Image (cartoon, rainbow, N blue to C red):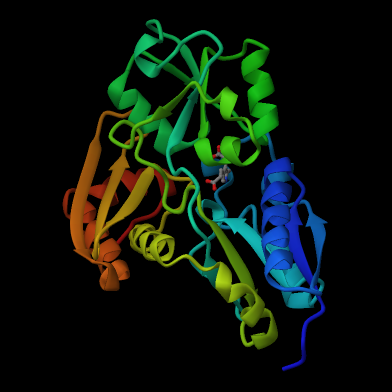
Length: 313
Ligand SMILES: NCc1[nH]cc(CCC(=O)O)c1CC(=O)O
């Protein structure tokens, strides 16, 4: 194991992705005197295809594939990801090394005119391309018109400011990280919009067996966030879903217990299946799988088959 003097981080070029990579770079350099950290930037499919809802282009890992190719080729040493966008399966030779402490996991209501979802007038136009956000919003307010909203956070905000929408929904974490606290009109409680698995958490991917790199990164791991996100991802994995399908999964640690809530909804909000369970933090993944089984017993397979175009067994 040779000492690493320069570490290269593969990252997307969006301002949020760059902020996240810079954040990890700063933390690593503060921890390891003499370490140089460089960013290597890439455009991914998810950044290039902007005119189609993500559920339609489907493909797992739209935002990570090019980064993984670079890791495997040795053109970079680690990739920093929003855990929400990280697929369940990793290519041979790569693994998710650590999950870092979570930022605020809630969705944010952003509007220049209205203070909350409740204040939106009948038939107001709300921008989001997330089926998870759409189904929860439509269940609460069937009158709202949901319109597709893609692009990076800045692009989405400028579409709101241009008057294309009465309000938009974004992840609070992205706005908080980029110091746009003032754009958050209201945090949407988890009872109203249950977050996506992994929302608000950063994860770091690396080459299996690269011990020198792992030794540098391991101290960034956060035990509570790791347990919560493992439970959320286990639920998603059992349902074969990620952040591009109408599935939510959110876990909180309370003492030695994990409290996991999950839901699967039809896109129009007419059906909403929910589960809620508690268990030992040590059994995080088992809790997630059990939550998924509860949802399947209630008929989640049927709802998801309509979205995926194939059956979920
Ligand atoms: N799907 C894009 C994406 N991936 C991660 C975040 C936000 C940051 C996070 O969840 O860590 C966003 C933007 C959004 O949903 O508004």
